[in-house]
Length: 368
Image (cartoon, rainbow, N blue to C red; front, side, top):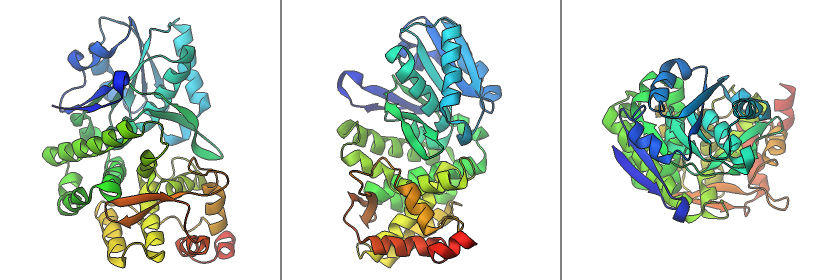
């Protein structure tokens, strides 16, 4: 078992990474505030892991709510189900919420915890690779809206993160690949040696070799913990973690939540960011080739769907948390392992990249 720390002063918390941690009360119970525990999971995870999680909570007044599975259910209506369960069981402000599942469950549970009685503790037990390396760490919680992804939410740090790597044994291949997209992101933004390691060891990750998965999870979490500790509320450096996300969120919203998995959309978005960076003269064509080749080696898309026109992309990208005073900011690359947040780019070059991505001009894509 490896333990990392997200260093946030008196709100610091551990990330436990290892095999067989789920159900081990030693990692969970020290972080529960009172007697009441609400365990939140979904219809896919519950049959696999709910009983094991509940076994470690036998000494507490524990209830559970099982939600529908999927990005399309990450909305305020679903959060209302969590509030209803908390109120029905008369949970007070010493209650602790436990998120057992992937990124959607973690985001919903964290947001509900941030809001219920103006804030109660919560714990993350991520069961997907994407959640273990990214969404469970850092305190970003929230839900989607029909007009934009993750535009409603709150910063609310968990008390701890328990990443049991054996839960990945039941993860389907598509979800595993989606998680690898976020792993690749860390190499691209600040860790070129890790990017090179991924180029050499991608086949081991896809084969679910325990040593390779454990190393990738630990290194990803270490990268993210350092960024979050330096910039908890995303006023500067933390925005780099959104490489590919402005494009990716537009893909998710434009195609309908759940059509493209988050990691798939971000993979295509990172390739678009690399292509834009190259056309601006900031990186070489070889860097773009390496980026695209690694996505393809992971079984991820390197191109967005062709049915999103340039105009539709721009419309959706305008509804993004990085837009300030009407100016679109993007995370782009100055090299493998060197990302920057900037609004200093030629919009005509962005339009050219979006036209190429949509298979032609904006009007052509809209007609087709």
